[in-house]
Length: 98
Image (spheres, rainbow, N blue to C red):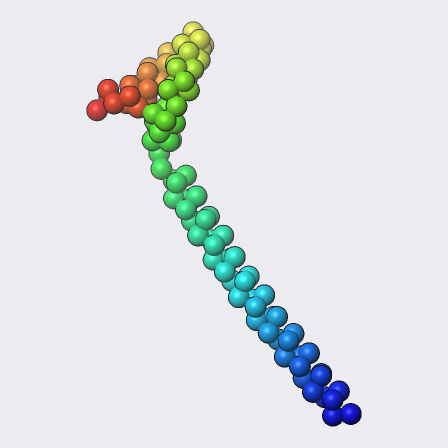
């Protein structure tokens, strides 16, 4: 009968150890997620123009298409302003707006 008590204690101890391990894993995952969310929030809190300039700088084909679309929509309401803005952003991305 003494073996049953020892086995019961061992099982409870194993369960407690597993709970501790799961708890630590949860905290580690939670901390990682919170860090990733904070990083994403920091990146998304920068001005829109900075993000667009980075995209235009990194992808010249995208910059060309960005200008083509702005030119195609220049006759629409607000289109001329959008075209001027697109030209300014592309010039800045190419280092000509500084």
